[in-house]
Length: 220
Image (spheres, rainbow, N blue to C red):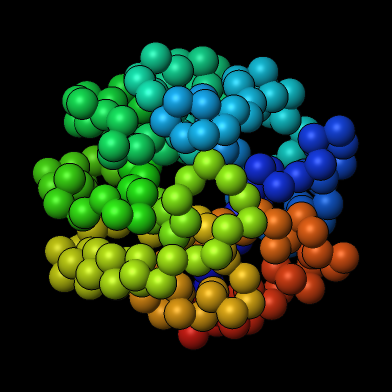
C-alpha cells in the first residue's frame, strides 16, 4: 500500500499544529515539509525552528525536503530540529555523495530530488546509499500546480531499474497529485504520494487520503 504525505506548503500556517493534527487523524503516513530559500526556487517558506516546533507533537514521520542552494550548510540544523528524512536536490549538490554520507552520519534517512527536466543519470553510483528518490512532477516553488505528464516515464524507468537491481529505496512523487493523477503515478512505480492543496483544501481529508490509497491499491 502506498504512503500519503501531506505537504504543509498548502497548510494554514496561522494554525499549523491544528492542520497537522487534522492530517494525522485523517490517516496520513508522513508529513512533507518543504524548505524553500527564495534562491533555488522562487519562494521562501520556513526554517528549522518550525520543524522543531512540530517535533514531539505529531506521530507523523517528518519528511524534510530541502529546496535550497548549498543544502550541506543546513543538514545539522534540520537534523537537530527533528527531521527523520532529509531530501536534497541533485541540481544543488556539487558533491552529492559527500552530502548523502553526511545525512546518514546524522542518523537521518537520505533522499535525492529531481526536477521535472533533470535526467536520471545523475543518480548513478549513489543508489545503494539513499533511502528515497523524489520526483518533482511540477516545477518547484508553488503549490497548486498541474501535474507534468512526461515525469511518468522517468518514474517508470527508475522503478524498472530498481526492481532489476534489487535496490531498496522508495520512490516519492510530489506535484499535482490528486484522484486523477494518483493511479498512473503509482502504476509507474511510486511508493509515496505527496499532496498539498488537494488534501489541505479538502472538506473531508480522511476521505481524500482513503481515496488516494484506494485508487492506488493495486500496488502492494
